[in-house]
Length: 189
Image (cartoon, rainbow, N blue to C red; front, side):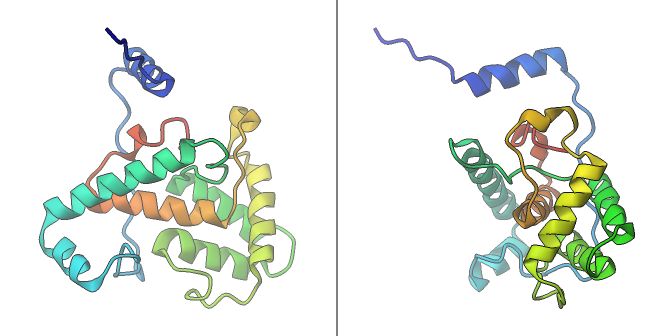
């Protein structure tokens, strides 16, 4: 007779559910003007049309994609930049970027806002600065705002991929009516 063990991440989430049986309300992600319509970008036009008409297919696909992203983030050697920024935290970061020193802070804030709230790439947002400048401003603002807080010892590091993944995950959650907290426990700031 073989005995199967329960993976440690499942035990940890079970323990957290026992400690906090009534979790807080789901994360709300606002609908903003200028958001990309063709979402997710990597699907074909026929599949996009099916998702637009049939909610169950869209929701099932979004759950599957959230699972894939969260599993990839937990794999060894991956996930350094995969954590989710909530809109309140992002607003603090963008405010700090706009008011801070450096090369073209207003332009950097505009582009990062378009990336986070509209899902655009820097090229689609009409970026006038390099990705290196965007990243430098983002890292400086993250240190000032102290997004990671007491979890600074974790191997997290903010990057442009964090902004892109945050938009994608929050849009999956909003459009599919899915609570993303169970997929990214301990990775939502």
